Structure formats: structure tokens, C-alpha cells
Amino acid sequence: MKVIAHRGACTEALENSWDAFRKAVDGQAHRIELDVHLTRDGHLAIVHDESLERTAGVNKLIADMTRSEVERTVKLTNGEPLPFLDDVFTELLPKIEFNVEVKSPGHATVEALAALIHKQSLAGKVIVSAFMEPTVASFSRDHPEIRIAFLWDKSLWWPMAFQLGPKSFMKKNAVRIFHPDAALVTPGMVRQIKLEGWEIYPYIGLRRETNREQLWSYLMTVGVDGLCTNYPREMQLWLQEALDDSNRFSSSGQLAHSKP
Image 1 (tube, rainbow, N blue to C red):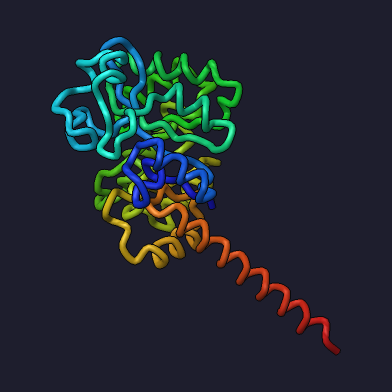
Image 2: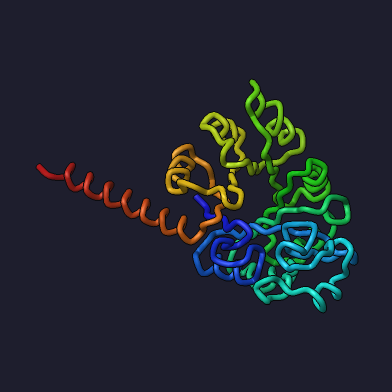
């Protein structure tokens, strides 16, 4: 079960910052999830919101600024420069996998991200994800060599909702990775994903990971491939303890079985 650091180690450091990414690596997460928006001149800035106000105190939109303007005038609230995806790949892709969530709609973002991934010698360590169906479909159609995931947060309360909604879209567009809200995951959903030969990595929104060990245990039991968590270091330690307990149980069972 892979540990995916949501916006980096976002409970230890400012989300989507160099500090959060380095702490995710230090905490032995398997993958970092981050968000990108396209600048006015076509560069991929790492930030969740369209505006820089929440994490940098700057009431401007990334789409209205050039990279040079961002680098000259913007500091995050922790004092760091706002990171760009090419720089983060250069430093950290040799150490950890990445899940890049596309926030900017449109063909320009798809092509800018695809071009950057194609330049990476470790491109196989990158997954792209999006809620926007046109973006997911465009990646799958125009860049099938790039691993693309479909994000989903809509209610699945009506009969056949999963089959008629995300599952139908994924089959139509040859998408093989599903990223649902963890609150929507059911054993039946996971079984259907596995029958298709797909992967499933749920995510948890910020400030919503209560009773987390209970949730982690449930998701492990139903068989998800990993979790995008706000507590990557703690989850990695929990997984190691669960593995150690399992090994001890297995060893004690074997010893008992071998006694005359």
C-alpha cells in the first residue's frame, strides 16, 4: 500500500512548498501529490489555488503572471520561493515518485506538462491526475505513454452510479488509475477496479483525516493500492508496525505448528 503525501507533508510544513516536499521524502513517503497551474508564459507553478493569496499573501492569479514576475515578487508565507515543477523534478524525482494534479484547464496546460514529463529520464515515476474530464481524455488520447488518473469526488448514492459514471468514462478513455475521495470507497468499488486490472489510490482532503488509523485499516482491508494522506510520516510508521505485527503473527503460527 503506497503512502502518497498530499501536497507534500502538509501537516508538517506549508502545503506545496519545498519544505513539505523534502519532509515527505524524509518521512519515506512513496509518492508526492502536488498541484500545478500554468503561468501566463507557459510555466508550471506548484500551487493549489488559482490565486496566490492563501499561501503567499499576494492577491494575484498565477495565470496573470509570468515566471519571472513570480520569481521576483512572490514569497510563500514560510519565506520560500514558490516552487516550479521543473525544478522540483530535477531535485526530487530521483528520490520519490510524483502525482501531478492539473488545476489549469485547457490544451496549453496538457501540452506543457506532457513536454516536461517527456524530458525526464525517470518519467515512469510520474502520474498525472485531474478532475476535469476533458483534461483526462486529452492526456489519454494524445499522450497514452503518460500514466493518467481520474479524480472523483461526486456522490455515488444512486444505483449503478460508479458503473455509469467514472467506470464508464475510464473504459471509454482507456484510463487505468482511479483517485476517488476516500469517503466514497466501498469493497464493491475496489473489486470492480481490480477486475478491470486498474489501480485505485483514494485521497483525503485537508483537515478531514479524523480517526485516521481506523480509516487506514479499512482501506488496507478492502485492498486499495495506496492513499493520498495528510499524514505520510505517521502512515508509513503505522504500515511498518502493521507489517511487523503480521510477520510476528506468521512466525509464531509457524513455530506453534512445528511443535510435536
